[in-house]
Image 1 (cartoon, rainbow, N blue to C red):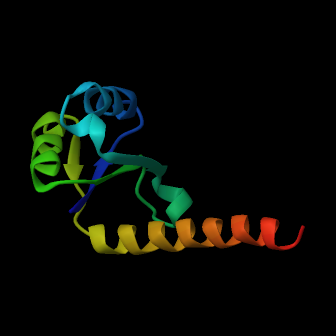
Image 2 (cartoon, rainbow, N blue to C red):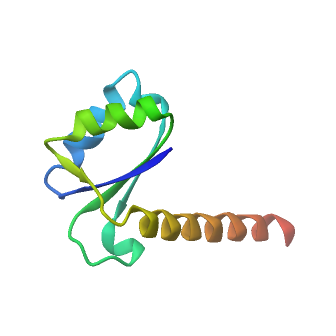
Length: 98
């Protein structure tokens, strides 16, 4: 399961710290991206969590006062996946041309 949260810049560090210090959420994939780096106009950052249903539920509990689940999460996930795929393809290109 994957979830996207929108967090303001002034609350980003606290949100990341909560997720990384919790026994459940710390074992999941947590990616933080500036909204504008994915082509979105919102101010702040997206925190993308990939993990078990229980971990995503726990993340929602931890972040309830700091960040909100993002309403267009599918668009964010699609754009993030595209960027990661481009990076992976570029990395493979480096080794193929040696």
